[in-house]
Length: 225
Image 1 (tube, rainbow, N blue to C red):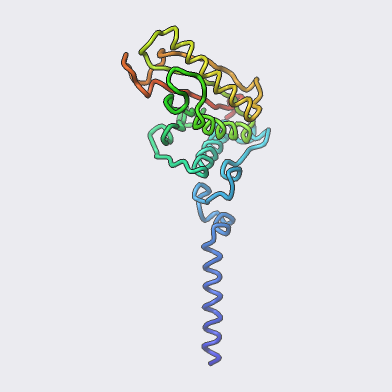
Image 2 (image 1 turned 45 degrees about the vertical axis):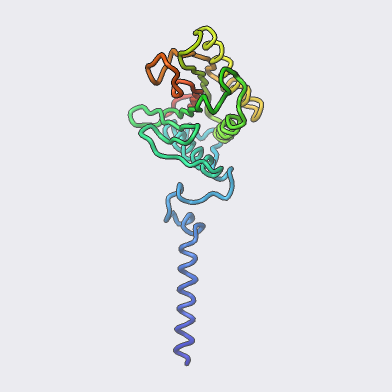
């Protein structure tokens, strides 16, 4: 009888120990599970953050890698499902692309589908675009040693002059949304411009959705290796 009691005691202890080891908090603590596979408890935890001065300690490639993983997890926490591409990550309406130099991450490029960002022929952001831009703004706040370049693009049909004006207005609309929603400082915007169809992805004179897009480049305030 004593043998059975002792056996059950040790069995129960073993189960408890197994449950602890299998827990995400323990695995995170011991480093048994890659950080990317551990579910976040909040959007802020998913995104992470780096304090001023981290760039000098980490260097640009590591700083941007941390931001890239954080932005990916923050999008996924909000329900975005990405698929892996050669250039980075893709989801309906948005892409996170890696701009690399000698296989080291130099910048992030966030591409918002033009059909998602704006109604046809207008520069008023859609609710979906505001949501996407809000996530990008969250990342800019969490990673303060970054700056931004914004480019608006159209496809070819229509007047070049009108398309150029529209693309410039759209890039300015994205900038204003970043500034107003999260108070991103003016000096962090290094370039905000529109290019009409001068920088096509698909070389065609016909209507092409890949050419209608807004591009947001995020890089560090200086390059540190």
